[in-house]
Image (cartoon, rainbow, N blue to C red; front, side, top):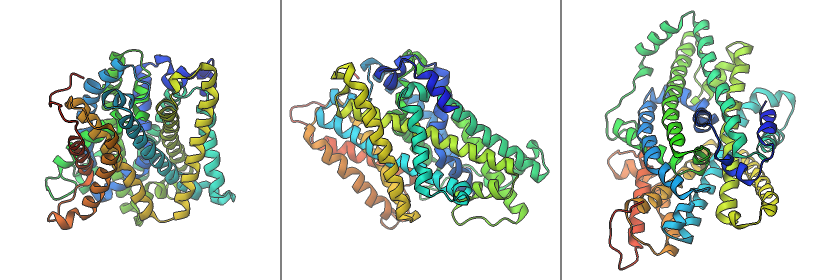
Length: 472
């Protein structure tokens, strides 16, 4: 189905189609398809499993997202449309200069490469255990086939194809959650209304926490959620590239507002599923895995019907592909536009260059996934993924400094500042409990990281500047 969609959407495709979909995407398709790209295969299995540890506290973060998406729609989107950007990091060049521009794009390329590889690695591991091991297919072969399939349906139409394929993938992912909820309630011998009552009566439904030292504290999670949305959507080429394919700014803003509403509903479904999984496990004496990520796959593949297992596999594949395909296209776009000066090249040269870059990033994702598999240490791999998350802090600092002030900086010092901030943040984060009387940053570390970058930018301000609000 994905390849058929790709064939239809890639007819007559050129570079403008690949990067911007000729700015003809219907806003409602972008809004719905972004759900799949936002949630990914990690969310698909992690959010339900985490309910056993953190209950519904993640919903505090989701509420914060709404504030973040409001800022994206009202502040960032008008800026991007006014500057007519293909790569959003082009703003940094216009505001600060060459090195700031390259630094912003570099941090995106680094974090998205590691993040996309990590997400695909987790899903590939589940599929390997569920299907490929019994067929005698090696891990590297199943990963290679996965990436080849993604490349096949994205290499020609790019973002135009992805807008449509993400819609299909989001539908399958959300359908998998809804169907699984129905099947579990049927196995438990209760209706949807009774299931809701049991969830509400259980400890799992506890949502709000007010303990400043606890990483689940409402204020830390709500504020962090707002900044996570701003940074990981509004300052992320992968997510914003879809928004920038809408015909007008007004359409793009409608897309963001409706996407945020549907995302809240989708996360409630995942949290509700998580609570039901734990209630079902308790009712049937199923031992909870040491890593709670394994609970949903365990029950869907081993304790429910074959149909439920198939639904789960369809859902997790859809979630993984919707995240990975847009990441691959965004990586190609950022590298071509930000590092190869793509817009200045002749049209006849663009397609072969774009094709080589697209292949190159496909190979890179494949290699990084195999490295994760070779490490085979969940704590190390999770640490690597967490470090990749720190790279969004410098983007937050750079964009906020550029938009809040009109100060000029010594551009050549921007990269050292952006390297130092996440390194310091990581050291502070892992020692925060010991250094700050039990205080844990949690998601709040993103704001700390961005603040350090902002402070570093103040330290490299050119002399003779006067601080003020930036008209942008």
